[in-house]
Structures are given as structure tokens and as C-alpha cells.
Length: 510
Image (cartoon, rainbow, N blue to C red):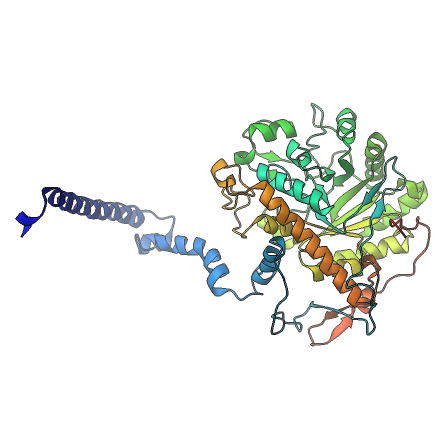
């Protein structure tokens, strides 16, 4: 029978047989090797007691987060963002219709759920309340008329890849929103799309530091000379790691990033815990005033709220100096923020969430008569229209989002942001992985997400009977309690009596 087969086929079968025998033999030898290694080591009890087989425990544990996401988790039970939230962003970014049939999958009886109070007789003129631009920094030489209530939060070049930053810049330009540089400095990629830029000054002063790491007025002027740079934000802390400076692993510190930041190549980039120049509220106001005078542009600060007595002291110091000394805005970040690499102990346990801190900050500014002078920017896990509308009801003027825009770029929540191995190319400098991220295509998705979210916030505002989303108030939303009853937010967080000392808000066209 074999003699009837062609010679080449016989030879091929022989080679395959030899290869199979060799592979089996090599596999057995490898298993024997790992058996001996596992049985003789004492660092891992499971591998010692169950040689070879025990190794699969670590594999299954690492793969579990991915299996849960696709096969086991329900639409609304994942953390930090569930499938329903991610899918809404994905569909919005693609420009697809987000309507759904057969009722909501959201359990409105969950404690903390938002229920907006619809008006019985909404206006007939339009289907949405139109958002107006708002002025920031009335006492700066060059105030900023911000067009969008929803903007791109601080994410540094370095933490994000080149095509990701380029896509965000182009998308922000298309949507008319601003792009915050994060503390990593201003790169050509931030400017490439023509977007409005908020330059963040972190504790390491990346991009505006002198040879000793101190703030350089000369470099500040150079940055401020760019028309695209509209505002400056002094970062005191961020939600992922309150009380600890930014962390960029050495693997991400490329030659280009090192040049932009003014640091050595291939070394961990770790910022100080705080600005050495700022040790009290007076020094904070001095620092803000210095940046504002040097740049001529609106300047504010970003902070996670934990202790809060210092905010009353800050307001008292402002009133003693005059309202022109106030920060032009305060970005209130939530303790559950998370785009940056951070110790788990800080990410999980330190800093108030926005649901508690935002009403507190707004209330303190109201008590001191500074609410109209200082704009409030809310930041932290606000990625859907309901969450943004809640922030506006609470008293925010603007909302920033980082992870929402990462999802619009294609993020799949692989939780590999700090490992330089992001499978979607968003947070890696691996050129092979970046090739799948086309800045032109993703820019359109960034813009679609932003514009769709704003439109849906306007729809909620219209349903509540107001003509502009910032006219939403705390009585427009009820918060579900553990007893199954909802309570108006103005009962949970009463609005203090307003002392009208600050300048009235300036809205374009009204």
C-alpha cells in the first residue's frame, strides 16, 4: 500500500512523524523540567504541592478579568465601567442611533441612582435646551469663552500614545471642546489638530521648568504666546493618587517625551507630592496670580477633596485680597479617578468621590459669595449624559472626562494602561500596537461622542423644562435611597443662602 504512494508524500509523512515524536518528547522533557522546578521550590505552595498543574492557577487568574467582561458579567455590574456604559460610548462614537426598545436595563431602585424630574409642559420650540458658551477668567488679560460643557480631561502625552493625542486634538477641534494636556507638558501632537488647549502645571513643572525644576516665567510666556493655549491649570492632586505625584514608568519615557518634559530618557518620571512653592492658601493664590500675570490667561487649580476646611480659609483669603485674586476655576476631581498609574491603596481608599465633594465645594463658594466669580469643573467617572446632567444640577459649569474619551478612541478596558502593552494602541509606545489607531478615523469618533453626549444632556434639560443645561438645579434631580424612596437633591444637599459679591456669569448671547 505504501509503495503505491508518491515518494514525496511518503517523505512528508515521515517528516511529520519525526516532528510529532520530537514534539512529544520535547514536551515531556519540558514538563519533567517544570515538575522538578515546581516540586523543589518553596515560594509558591500551590506549585509545590501541585507541580505543573499549579501554574495554570496564575494563568486563569490573569485571564479572568477578560472572561468576565465578555461572558459572565451582566450589562451593568462591571467596574470601573460596565458594559452598558461602554457600549453607549462606542455607539455614540460611531455616530449610531442610541435609542433602545423594550425598556431600560438600568435598575432605578439602586441606591444612588439619578431620577430627573420632568416638566409637565416642556417648550415646543425645540427638542433640546441649547448650550451657550461661558466666559472663564474675567480679570485675566485674555479671558476664555469656552464653547462646550463637556471637555477632555487631563491625560499626558507619555501616558497616552502619539496617535491617541493626535486623535484627541483633532476630535476636540471638531467638537468645539478643550483638550487638557495633563502634567506631561505640551507636545506638537496636542497642537496638531487645532484644538483649544488647557495647559496643566503639575508638581514637576514639566514643560515650564528651569534647570533646577522650578517654574520658569520665560517658558510660561513661550507657552502662553500660542493662541491655542487658552487656560492654565495648577494641579494640586488627582483622583487616581491623591497626595502622590504623577508616575510615568521608565518604559514609556522615550527620547521625545524626555525632551518635552525636560527629564532623562528611560528613567521613571515621578513628580513631587506637591508644589514646593505652595504650602498654604496664601501661597496657592500667589502662585495662581503669578501664572495669570505672566501668561495673561485664565488660571485655576485642580484638586481632589479630602480635608475641606482649607477651602473656607481660601475663600476668606480671597475676600481679604479682592475677588480678582481668586482662581478663575476649580477642577474638582473625584477620588475614584483612575487613568494614571497609581498605588492601589490610594486609588481605592483616599479622597472623596464627586457625589460628596462637588456639592460641598459649590456650597462653600456660595456661602462666601464667590460662586459667580469662580467656575466649577467636575471631573471623575462622568461619561454618560445622566452623570453630566447630575453634575450640572449640583452646580458645575463644565464637566471633564478622561476615560470616556479613551473609550471613544477604542479602549476595551484591558486594564494595561501602565504596562506599555495596551492592545488598542492608546496607552503604549509600541509602534506595532499603535498602528491599529488611525488618528483621522478616531478623531471623528471623539467628536461624535462629545457632541452626542452634549445633545443628550440638552435633551434631559429640555425635559426638565429649562432652556440651557446650566439652568438645571438640585431640585431637578432626585437621588434613590436605600429604603427604595428617592429624595430631591436639594433636600440632601441644601443650597446655602447666596451672598452676591462675585461677578455675574457671562454667557454668550444672554
